[in-house]
Image 1 (cartoon, one colour):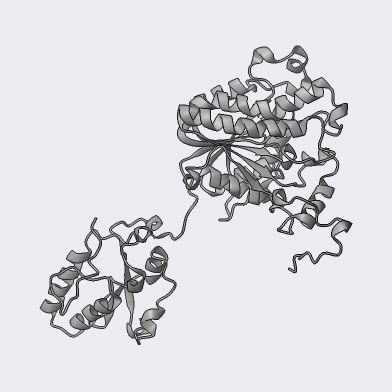
Image 2: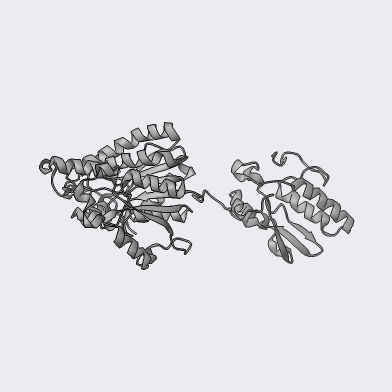
Length: 438
């Protein structure tokens, strides 16, 4: 659609297209205010013709900033008025207010009454008037693996995706399934389910999942007969992917939010082979398996996200048992999987390096409070990281706004990853290091 010609100078009102200059628009109002009905109708016909089908797509900047639109659809009929919504236009074209007109003596108070609102686009959709960049995941479906309570990063990611409009499916570790589903039914999590608009996050379905096992043939007999697994079926990675396909056909977003290191409290030199390999299996290969089995049902253009930690590249004493190696493997796999999944099905693969959080899982390490205090003292942003900040970052990565981002590690840790030293060390006591004053 061709934009309005804002370069033609109009010496008088004619059948030429209306200029978007606010002053010529006001000239139109003056021209028709006290004219005979036949003249008014003729002038309005001209205006209607000029604006028919016009869309003010300001994201394409068809109007120079020096010629902002005031209210190009306003007309006054015998003391009654029909005026377009300035606020909607201002939002669409990044105009802060109607002040340019107020300085010249023209204000909304000069119009006696407002009878209706005339839209500045040919579409009636309210969404067309929404300003700014929106994370819109309506019509998308997400599967989040590793949600077993309401205070971890997995839950926060689910909430942010739901707030953006996505349908939520979750995979819960089999031994925790009954407690999790019971808590949901009893409303124990209702306070944590509240979304920004006041509604409650709806989890469409909860699937039992143990991401350590790809298929039933790999499950040892002692696990199959374990009472904590009794009553649950189809919980291996392959079976869960098949169940989701059978239930919903496809998904758009895949989130890996699980990790486990049975010997995490042991230094690496004291970690057994089985403990090391268990950490790799549960914390990194589980992501490879998850994406492998879900890839056929991930819609092209979809997104896959995992969670990592700064211990993958920096020494974190106490974070042992092979967990630092598992996170390093996860980040390396993210880059390789981004290439392979991107080429096969146009799927973006990214990982979020999240700062420390007081989650139930993190408390198993034993020094999470110390790490949070350290981060607050040494990160560029001196505040405690909240789970919702990680959730919102995941929503961004899952959205079309991140359509060209893949194979990357996104740090959401208040900037701690950028630091080379701990500035709270006594060594730096004589330096004038700025601190947060708020």
